[in-house]
Image (cartoon, rainbow over all chains, first blue to last red; front, top):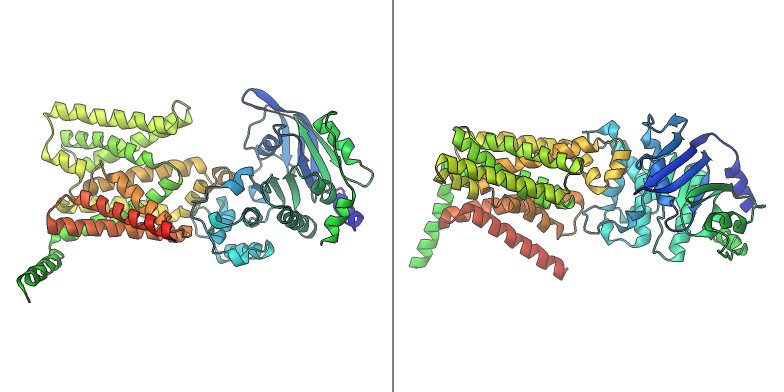
Length: 269
Length: 280
């Protein structure tokens, strides 16, 4: 089953994110150096690396939120400077789960904000927008809490709400920055399952920053290691996780990785 | 019926008779528009953690009032001009990195208020009219004031109604709003101009010193109720209008400072909602 899933997502498809010779500087220090890689349609990429290695910086640079010092980024074949089709791109920031619990938003209201964009500026959301909201709530399994205040939800529920907000714009690529910090293992596993569904059933390209190496090597098609420089490797049966990770984390790190964990992940489904 | 019963009955009849007076109708209409605009704009200010910008602009507007009285022009119009300049000044200082938000507000507050003081001393000192702008005088609101308050208030409410969802999106997550192609900088500036308009229209009603209470208290009270955004907005507007009408009514009957009673009522509502939240 594992092989089937992987061969499905490993097919070389249209490149949707092409990065060439990227340098990013933050507070006068170089955070990303000489990064060149390509992400294809349908890729499910796990972004790993030590803290402070530049994972969030890379995502923000890819979204053109942070300026870069050098290099080119092409999204859907277009230079990022002239790229305007941002509806195709969704982003779930690191701080999403820690948002102000006093902010008065019900789940349905928060998710509907994903439909607010340049094309409906100054107009109320249409019936189709609300239908999309309800559809995504259903898909993420949070229809039952649609009227609850987001601040009152558990960590796992909040994650799903924020991913629903990102999904409701019907993106073709979604970037998630450590969206599952501080929740129990079971909730994490359910969350990864949802992301796999999105990738396999809806064909959405996913870039996920995570520290969960088991999830990366069991579920994803590529691993991107970031420690100032960026190294992308395809995950296939022949690739040893230790080999890939050592390049990112350095020789002095020791990795313990049990292959049988993957089998367990898929047994649950 | 005993004597005290008769006197209470007379008081009640007096209250009902108040509604027949034009000054009272003007006060209620102008007050309701100001309370609605203040509560709605104020809720966004609280959520953007910018409540003090309201106080800053209100004090800057004082310079505009002094200028208007000095030049013999309607002070609401001159204070509108000065407040808009203050908003643009604060935005400029923040954008160019000259000062953080709170420092920029402090600078504008001080400059605006001191220019008012200079103009007043040049004009020969304080007068009754100036006091009415400092502390509000809703019961003396005339037809011209009411027209200005209505035009400004309805415009502010109208603009807020149109860009309500974009402002919520920016307030909630500015980066994401920018990513979605929402003109964040333009709308943030427009919102700050709305704040200036709302404050200026409320000056005659509640005065520059206390206008911040009308901006902050209704929203803060509504936030205690743990409602959705729509529910919180409606509750804030409701609390604002309730404070205003109660204030006007009580101050007319007992002949005490209207702005004081409005703020006192709003603070009372806040206390009740805070207790409700604790008990919940």
